[in-house]
Image 1 (cartoon, helix red, strand yellow):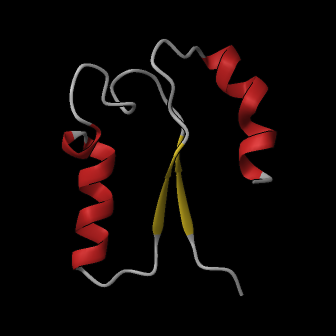
Image 2 (tube, rainbow, N blue to C red):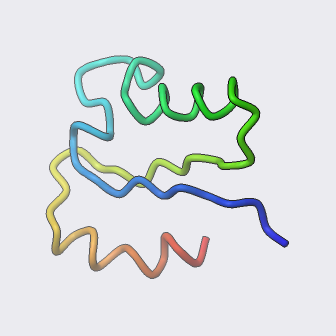
Length: 65
Protein backbone atom coordinates (compact mmCIF):
# COMPACT_ATOMS: atom_id res chain seq x y z
CA UNK A 1 0.00 0.00 0.00
CA UNK A 2 1.28 3.46 -0.90
CA UNK A 3 2.17 5.96 1.76
CA UNK A 4 -0.43 8.72 2.23
CA UNK A 5 0.25 12.04 0.52
CA UNK A 6 -1.17 15.50 1.14
CA UNK A 7 -1.27 17.47 -2.11
CA UNK A 8 -1.22 21.25 -1.68
CA UNK A 9 -2.54 22.95 -4.79
CA UNK A 10 -2.60 26.68 -4.42
CA UNK A 11 -1.29 30.11 -5.28
CA UNK A 12 1.50 32.36 -4.00
CA UNK A 13 0.68 31.80 -0.33
CA UNK A 14 1.24 28.05 -0.47
CA UNK A 15 4.09 28.50 -2.99
CA UNK A 16 5.94 30.68 -0.42
CA UNK A 17 6.25 33.57 -2.85
CA UNK A 18 8.77 36.18 -1.72
CA UNK A 19 10.24 34.04 1.04
CA UNK A 20 12.51 31.03 1.37
CA UNK A 21 10.51 27.85 0.65
CA UNK A 22 11.50 26.33 4.00
CA UNK A 23 9.76 29.20 5.84
CA UNK A 24 6.42 28.74 4.07
CA UNK A 25 3.46 27.06 5.74
CA UNK A 26 3.62 23.99 3.51
CA UNK A 27 7.23 23.26 4.44
CA UNK A 28 6.43 23.91 8.09
CA UNK A 29 3.57 21.40 7.82
CA UNK A 30 5.93 18.80 6.33
CA UNK A 31 8.43 19.44 9.12
CA UNK A 32 5.70 19.06 11.75
CA UNK A 33 4.56 15.79 10.23
CA UNK A 34 8.13 14.48 10.17
CA UNK A 35 8.69 15.49 13.80
CA UNK A 36 5.46 13.71 14.76
CA UNK A 37 6.62 10.57 12.90
CA UNK A 38 3.63 10.80 10.61
CA UNK A 39 3.46 8.61 7.52
CA UNK A 40 2.13 11.54 5.48
CA UNK A 41 4.25 13.27 2.89
CA UNK A 42 3.41 16.74 1.59
CA UNK A 43 3.60 17.34 -2.17
CA UNK A 44 3.72 21.02 -3.06
CA UNK A 45 1.94 21.61 -6.38
CA UNK A 46 1.43 25.33 -5.84
CA UNK A 47 2.27 28.00 -8.40
CA UNK A 48 2.38 31.68 -7.62
CA UNK A 49 -0.44 33.39 -9.51
CA UNK A 50 -2.39 30.15 -9.93
CA UNK A 51 -6.12 30.36 -10.60
CA UNK A 52 -8.87 27.84 -9.93
CA UNK A 53 -9.05 27.16 -13.68
CA UNK A 54 -5.30 26.59 -13.80
CA UNK A 55 -5.43 24.19 -10.87
CA UNK A 56 -8.33 22.33 -12.42
CA UNK A 57 -6.41 21.98 -15.68
CA UNK A 58 -3.39 20.50 -13.82
CA UNK A 59 -5.08 18.32 -11.20
CA UNK A 60 -5.21 15.08 -13.19
CA UNK A 61 -1.50 15.24 -14.04
CA UNK A 62 -0.65 16.07 -10.44
CA UNK A 63 -2.64 13.18 -9.02
CA UNK A 64 -1.17 10.74 -11.55
CA UNK A 65 2.42 11.65 -10.67
